[in-house]
Length: 142
Image 1 (cartoon, rainbow, N blue to C red):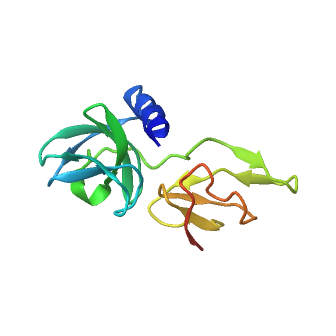
Image 2: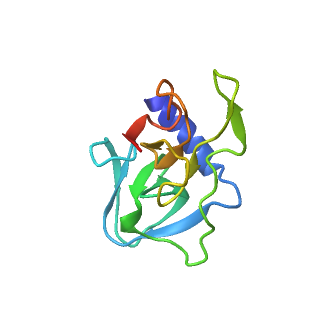
């Protein structure tokens, strides 16, 4: 788990130009996964600025050298925030040889999505095995 957090921290701290800066509206828990049951890595005081990446109901975030997730409801994001981008561009070939859209981040389920992943993305997988495997597992099936 520490290795995953270190890799995530490195990715977030080397954030691309599309990364956003957000401000906490209340004390906010930086968690190890996008769930209220996940381990609290640190508490971010109200009014503090942090870097955020992809957001759905949870935002990937980094603060104080740690990387994790913060509930979007506890953040003030810039009004000019860009729309949610695909988790990774393009498609992949599944075991049946079909081209399947890669998971995307969105505020609600896009047409054709089959599962909501724990990191807030939506999967278009046609098989249950491996669905959301790089996105924290399946939060719920659609």
